[in-house]
Image 1 (cartoon, helix red, strand yellow):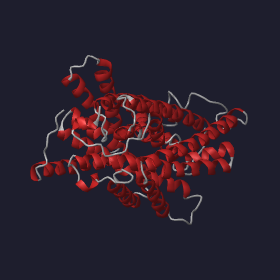
Image 2 (image 1 turned 135 degrees about the vertical axis):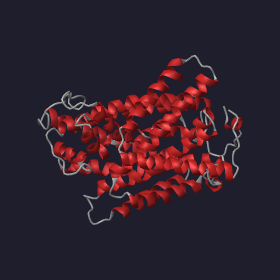
Image 3 (image 1 turned 180 degrees about the vertical axis):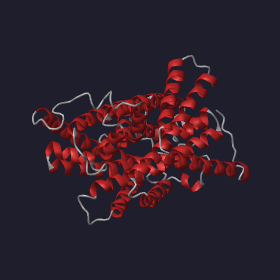
Image 4 (image 1 turned 120 degrees about the vertical axis):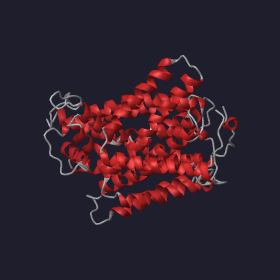
Length: 447
């Protein structure tokens, strides 16, 4: 199925394969993502950090299945925006795209802030904003060179992260079982503690842990750059990358939680690095903190910038955003104006939230999870209502289950997060009314 069937012209370069998409998703989610937010998740989950990630895997599995279903029918860039637009209607598509933009716009800034926080103890004389500038320039610069360069750089970054993760797990297990550090062995405490378990508490932790999973959904934004004609390739890559990284998240946080048994952290920002130092010494603290900075600030900024630019490109192509954002470079064939805009906005947002990592994390998750709710609704409407599908497990049970879990996670978020989210949504509604009623941009797509 080509994009010409949907009324578009193929402008982006088709150069990505299944392996590239899986790598892209893994780099987006960052195999060592818990390094940066471990302290916050552990604190919110009363130590049951592995349980928070396990529930996160389940919740995102249902979402991945919804992405798999919609990406097969609509192989277009745009992710949730495209799926809600085609699966429900024009207004739903715009609002879904607007909500997911809150996630995508803030993610690079979150990455830069977390990376700067990891490097701050190592280079106290260097201001955090200087690190942010360097990370933003790198993310935009590599993306402007073309999608193939971005894919190659992503693979190298992924391999480096997996090596660091293997070292931490090996040293951590040795410290537990041979040196008797922490709990002295792997226990069930990181998964379940009856005396501390509370549904509300756990889901509050899941709302923070969900940040680590954001990215598997971004694979769908690269649909128009896939070289394989198989309509299922994007969906399969989405599911495979989620399950692989979910297993890694649970493994590393389980080991870390038992290593940290009885510890009092100096800061939630540096909790994982303190735990690593307890297991292997200062060198492991340095290795994990540097790896976090590079993985969050450089590796993930490459793919996050690419995804956000494609969302902006897709919405601008449909005249929902300024047309200039749909301009594609004749040489590298990437949406270069959108890429540059992402870099500039990221710098501005980063300066506002430079010392508020926990707050920007919640805001990012609000945008993503509300967008996912619209995705699940799109699956039911498109397949069950319109197409009269009888595949009730995939097209009804999975999206309904995913919707229910994510709705509860959203409910567990703080008041400040809801206020910002609703303000963002209100601005989007006003913008859409002006767009359709004043500017008369209301071309209804045939679906």
